[in-house]
Length: 386
Ligand SMILES: *Cc1c(COP(=O)(O)O)cnc(C)c1O
Image (cartoon, rainbow, N blue to C red; front, top):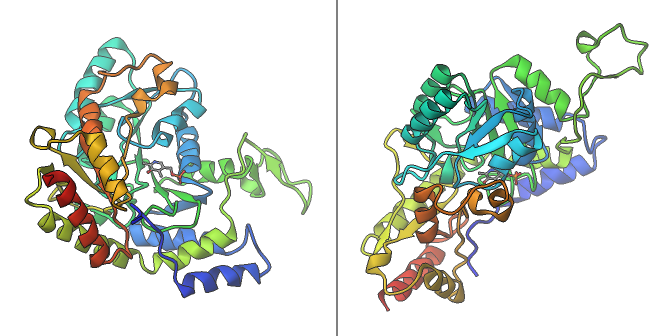
């Protein structure tokens, strides 16, 4: 089966991890700060906090922004559940903003309309989480303008988007947001096995997240409520978690960062090739915003079902039968049973639901060969023309 995503591990990656295993520190050593600096410098953010997953990064980002009971977090229904769950961890309520049918990202016009209504009802969100689906950045300038006007905070869920650009600058520079989050799960663009990172240009948010990722404990005398008792002393000043990244993961991350730009360039080559090879089929290929350079984590096609003699499910199953590991990103979060119990129902976000009924993620990963890609294309022709 040709997988929809797969990590690339080189000998240099292996040597980097083995080097850590033979060193003094398996955790809380020099590698995590080195990885943080490497990413922060690359994307142009001032502060970076590496953690054990993007889910953890989203959680401490919400807490650092003061999200709590009685507050609202809004995000896109077409995302992984973690983009919404992070608000629930903090005791906040969740709501969704429907997608733009062309980019599949949270729609800024729908966001504006929903904010105007929420203002009239006194139910404005405290945090909005735009998700850069497939690696294509949201219209962050528009989201930022709305954040200024309505007074909410912005966390970019850039789990798909490291190495991509918006208006010529790397995603993660937080120009239009308070915090940006990356994921390093093996299917994503670079990997640390499990891992994530929160980036910000705000030192207070960075300090707060640094505390929260490690029990709320500090050894920094300037953060303590009174003078240190002695050299052994640390103070717990907040309720935090153990969300730390290990040195092994950080070493892998540092090594992978060396190839980030090459990876994204390769994904663009593959995407251009898919664009050409699939042009005749009854599908909608991904639309790319001219102002952006996508990280291209995913290549999603939509079936034009009125022109196809099969159901979405049949096409999906037949592709899998032919060894093409297609996937679907994502099941609209508001249709998950856990969210339906909060009152969401099918029909609430029609563009998201239509997208779900037509979308298929094709295999896309940096080491994918043209031969593998040709196999995917041939399978699609076979299934869609028969
Ligand atoms: C993968 C992903 C996450 C969660 O990342 P983890 O590192 O696995 O916790 C969150 N949001 C989106 C959009 C993702 O794709």
